[in-house]
Amino acid sequence: MLMNGLRATAGAAIPKRLDSLTSLRFFAAFAVFAHHFTGLGGKTGFGRSPALFPFSGIGGHGVTFFFVLSGFLMMWVFKPREHPMVFYWRRIGRIWPVHLVVLPLAIYAFYIAAKQDIDWPSVIASVFLVQAWFPGVEPTLPGNPVTWTLSVELLFYALFPLAARIAVRMRTRWLALTTGLALFGMYAVNWIADANLEPAMARWVMRHPLVYLPEFLLGMTVALAVQRGWRLPLRPIVPIALLGGWTYLYFQERWDFSNFVEHQMEFAMRPIVGVLSALIMLSFVQREIKGHRGVLNNKLLIMLGLWSYSFYLVHHSISRLATYEFGRMPDNNAVIFTLIGMALVINAICWALFTFVEEPAEKWWRKHTPKRWLDRSGETGGRALPPAPRTAPETQTPSQAPVASTVVR
Image 1: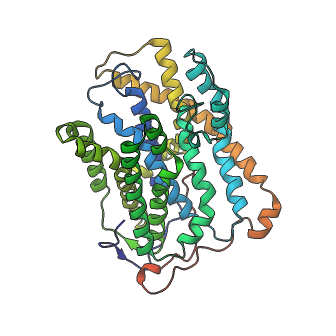
Image 2: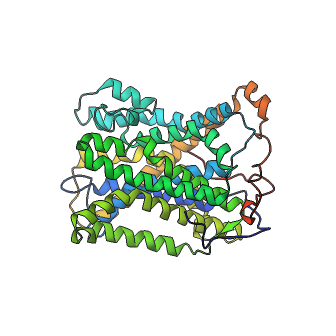
Image 3: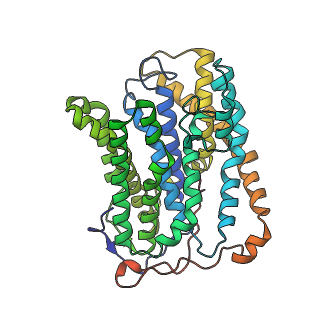
């Protein structure tokens, strides 16, 4: 992420709530749902609308948004004196309860109803969210298929306490340069794997948790830059339009390019979507810092964003079961109404999961954080971020560590 064009500002209050990011989570989860609903081509998915497909394929990269968002939010609320075990403990309380509750539904949908044999070592790996680490799991995405992304998140959680302490001691420009090189490395790994490995092994390498770490680093970098006072004059419509343009170019026009260019666009897809996701977040966060409130501050959208983790975990299973029960819908634009109706049903389920599982389980788990870890750092985790190295305006830090309303996954 280049620092040219960014400017440092002083005195702007850092908001304690980031409601716009909470709402954006819903749109990212809905994009993943639309991708699974419309399928990959042929007779996959529940139904395909010509108005959405193939552009709905960008929804598969909604997970990139989640990875960047995780890096942003964890850096936003980072407490240097918090005991690392407190951080790990709370991450467990965030992700595992609803994951375990939803897993039986996924096993029924993707194994029992599908009449597929269960490879128990692979399913057990998915229970502990380490399935993406092993190349021999069967099927490629075992257990609840969408939880491969939690396997990626798990690595970031493991590294974050150390990575954050290193990041806050780096100048913003050097952190941005490191992030840019890491994103280029992500692109290069995809290219090298595709050129030198068998297809199955190449797909595993491209999905390996290590390959996604640059996207988390991107989120961390943007969060620190904002906290230190850096601003980029940017209206939300600009990165959103760029994302729309890239989507059209990739899914509609890339076939007209040479094979080399087509493949390069494919290898660069995740880093490009990551940067555009970061810019979208940045544009809305800067608006909130200025006190602007827009559609993303709507209470309904905020609630949908809070339910989005459950939505993400359950949507693919519901869509698959509907396909078994009703068969595929006709491929026409009327299927959009089916998509909306299914989304409403899934959100009703997710309201129940959030209200009766996710939120109470997280509160209970947090309440039972071992006191020996809290005694070291205190319940609030100690002081705010330490100042970055002095020498430039970019080193400005907020006087108090902010608290984000968005739930970090």
